[in-house]
Length: 381
Image (cartoon, rainbow, N blue to C red; front, side, top):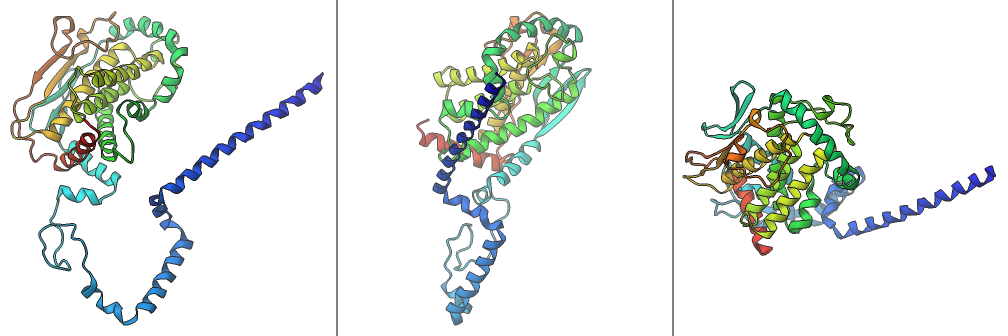
């Protein structure tokens, strides 16, 4: 009977799955990708010999290139042909000529230059604009509140089996979940995707600064009964990073696509953000209170981000405060609760900032926003 073990050899047929690799031939459609071959030493030799051969054929015409050269001027302020001056310094329009990741670095530098992080009171931290206007203030909950939230985290574990595919694929970034709603595509809406990437990186920096300062342990650090189904991240819990980032993207896309908060498209985006946020509690990685503070941080940070992209001399944004010590210990995470002051949510504060002139604060970010907004206009939004 042990001979039947030989049937295990049929598992080898799984190798036929390798034929799926032929899908890679679709890559030939993207000739632009061949530019990356410039690091190939064999190609470098070929280009060298090609240049030498071409020069020999051109002969005496080599020295007359200036007489023949009539380039398209990609910078303003020089009427000569060929150009005789350098481009103007520090012009946002130059971004069109840089690589996408370079645009990202530049816009992130602009954004980070606007922030100030400080502690105005015990166990409280505030992100402000460099002009002094507040953006977000968070006071952490007490240990007792976290401990009383443990039964809620355990109750969410019943949803794990159903949500494993989502939990596993919603590790950062969750771009497929947004493209499926908003029909984003790297060829058709590249600047929109660039803007989202910048927003996510800035959000990650901000949320990590709060996490480090507030130092709130994860559920598994309180109880062995939690048993999360993903490796618990090596940083603290509150505010939830997934809640912050997903609600940042939902609000950003809402504004970029010209949607009001109650449109069907906005409802879908908020629903996805809430689901991503849900799944971190279901996975055993967060408390409900982490999600509430993360949603507040993400939406508020998005409002500030959009203000820098679109605001003028009388710009304002809505600043918010989360007072964790006032959060009801038995309260679960509710993605529909208001982020504005309400008797039922006394732990949330909200106010409009004083007017500030943001006209010249983020010219490169504004340029990218304009490009992304044009993509959305062309898509019918």
